Length: 111
Length: 113
Image 1 (cartoon, one colour):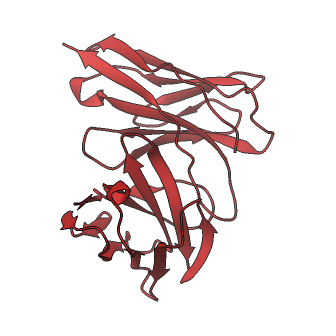
Image 2: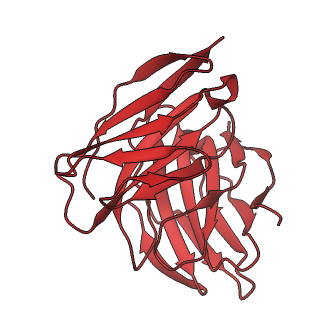
Image 3: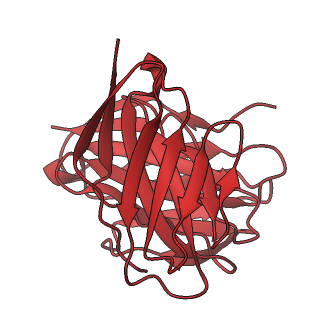
């Protein structure tokens, strides 16, 4: 699976938008971009995924660049409960299900 | 609907013992994946089961094994425990259609003394 690169940490003010970057320059044409997060002492939580179009759901928006080499997860109005480690993962769809987690990025939302 | 449940939540064993962890997936989900999380190695994929068959396997020694039952519940077993097996073991369930939208349980915290 292609590897991703994320900054190790980021701070954000409560109520502001949090823009979490991810580089995946070696992504192949049929690999999707997934975002998961892990709040302390809990199992990871699925957030969103996309192939090449921008995606939005009740939790976040995913913006994928046209060349698909990078993406940004946007939390429109960050709250203290959004403090977590965020993982950007690229993976094929179809067949077996396997997520290859990197180190992720610690987002701290400050009051 | 009920989420993924894992039992036990905490476990203490000694070196050389074996342990069995259990995972009950979300109703209707047919795929169960297992992951190990340690501070040093992060989250690592152990294996995935779908329809009672191991469909994918990570890079772990044969001491780590698993199985899935006809009701999709899964167990993983670690034999001849080593200190380095101390970790949070996470189970994730999904529909199994390959879309990688996995739902994780709270994990079992294993401590090997």
